[in-house]
Amino acid sequence: MPAETIAPDWPAPARVRALVTTRTFGDMKSAAPRARLRAQLPAEPVWLRQVHGVGVVDAARAPANPQADASFARAANVVCAVLAADCMPVLFADARGEAVGAAHAGWRGLAAGVIEATVAAIGLPPGRLLAWLGPAVGPRAYEVGAEVRAAFLQRDARAASAFAEARPGHWRLDLYAVARQRLASLGVASVSGGGYCTASDPARFYSYRRDGAGERMAAVIWLA
Image (cartoon, rainbow, N blue to C red):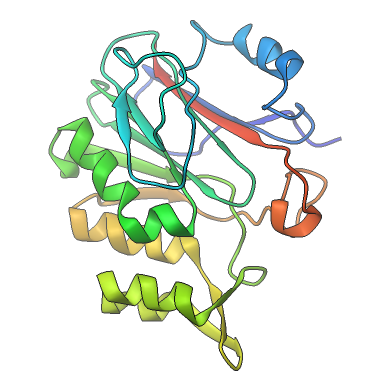
């Protein structure tokens, strides 16, 4: 049986703690799996009402269930969290262990600038930040229409390299490649992860694109 959680493989300082649940852990929209996760954490995660946008909140000061797609924390034992099943969770950590963040980056949020918004909200020099790209639909399984490609190219023409033509008017999109481009442009040089595909690994991951269901996994991060 696959492991219930994945620990990011990245050079974050020891004070930074993070994990991603797999489908073995259970649907993170449900109460029982959330209670099991809470038992492993220093506090209840700051769950977001995700809308595929670019809103970012300070998890230590946010109201309950804020509408946003990213959060950050500088205080200890404040747990940032995002839900995903094909969309890409992006975790951030300061190399000095002073801040963490989590972003929900599906194609809409990624195209609109959720990564840029999260880095700006954290408020530290981007060169000090580390990023980890969590489980998302991979480039071989993610076919999109021409309107999606146009949305990315409108913001940055270099995104063309992240698309491969699948058939007339349809493209395979590499979310990980776009994220790396955006992070590099910001000056975030340490980027890890990005080797997953939720759609092609049903033993480990939920996938809306594959199954058409609503289950979600969670990515959480905090400062000890």
